[in-house]
Amino acid sequence: MSNIIVVFPKQEDARSIRGILVRNGYSVAAVCTSGTAALQAADSLNEGIVVCGYRYRDMLFDQLYESLPPTFRMLLLASERVLGEGIPEGVASVCMPLKVQEFLESLEELLLSMERLRKKKRNGGRVRSEEEQKVIAEAKTLLMEKNHMTEEEAHRYLQKTSMDSGTNFVETARMLLCLMKA
Image 1: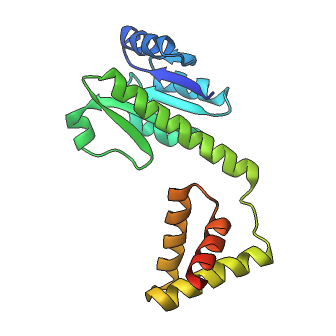
Image 2: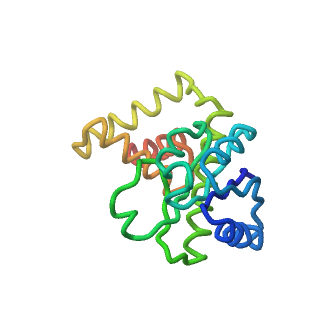
């Protein structure tokens, strides 16, 4: 499970958010009232999520976001007005006043995306064999000829079908070849 750092200018607000997280089974690594303290906490951890408000004593959320290590994500809790002003790409947000369920769902999405990145990094982007590449190319060619698709459209079709059916990309290409050649 990822480390969570809670950052709010008021200690009571930070403790309240920490309480919600702990009651719902999440581990909070640090509770901070300044951006500097949050950065120090992040530097001592490998990765994590910063759950924060908009403004602290020493900086704004976007300054904190830019200074975080690349293995950290941010979940901003802010008013509709602040969110309407625009937030940097990559920052997840929840509108205040806080709806606990929405907050927890957003946090869970961040945790899942971090887990997917970890798996992808661990697997190192598996290289397909020559035979697998031929199967994919043949399936794309068949889609392009019979359905008048571009190469990109054929690829996306295979990708979407693979995701929808829960089979890997190569297996989907093989099934498509069997169906279309029959």
